Image: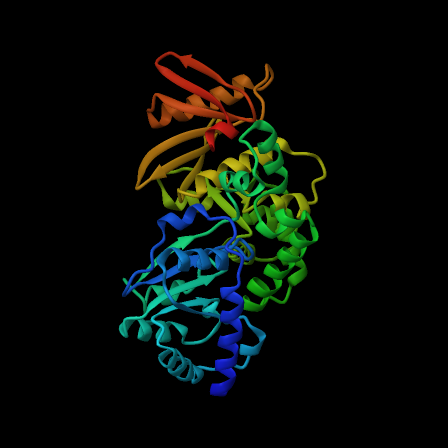
Length: 401
């Protein structure tokens, strides 16, 4: 339990720090966000990707007078359900109608509190570091009363602006190695990304889900980060990590994906059951994590480029698959149930690999009956006409510009 004066002092302290926050690089996501009455705006994303900075930018954009409260503040460790009444009293005393809550989902009955605020015509914005943030509660207590969005580390475009670089192959090479975590890019201190992963595994996964075998969780996370662009399955990894149950491996997969450490791309099939059964390709949420947390010591430029294109596509698309029959195509992108784009990724087209890359794309084009598709490379430009079908080869730094 917190006393009223304790809560007041914590609010004063946090909001002073928030008001003095560096506005940082304006995020691309900002233009799509709006604080709306009667709806809670939910922003999720991996830790340290810039969610609180985005809140500050949103506040400035909306010209709102808001109250900010981060529930992971250690001074709030004794916060109980009864303290919500004290918090409401404090909010009413201050006469502020726009509320920013960070990591409120760690508290029991938070959703009832938010619903009450919405009913009282407060504007509420919630940020959290888990994709399932309130998933159960959003589907029950806040049905039809929330708008959700995701924030990732800097995109390639944001990276260029942050580092004040011209778009070029050299800039792309830099991004493929460093990724887009703002704090890391300021310091180039790899320990930041080591500690970030450790923090996520311990706080967002092990403690949250009551996992006792933390060592296996960490080994699995390292393995997945090290194998970006490769297909994985619960059955295969169950044996590799000496885990008795495939269910346990799949639960670990979901925990890591929900915490935005990695992302999975299913093999395309019109059957949902087949999609679930097939191997999934794994990608890291940021290439800085791969650079500083993988156990791979070669450059892996091809897999870095493939991961980068996935992240670019993922910024605006959630329906992403890979295609595989006799040949393989890296990305099949759907939007609202309709095919949007077929993408093959190859760091460099050579005499040794060109037939494989083109044939995989042509097989997918034939399967989906489309006439045009792309091969994204590091720095090559070409056009291939194969009968009535056209394949455009583009450098990634131009494709993502």
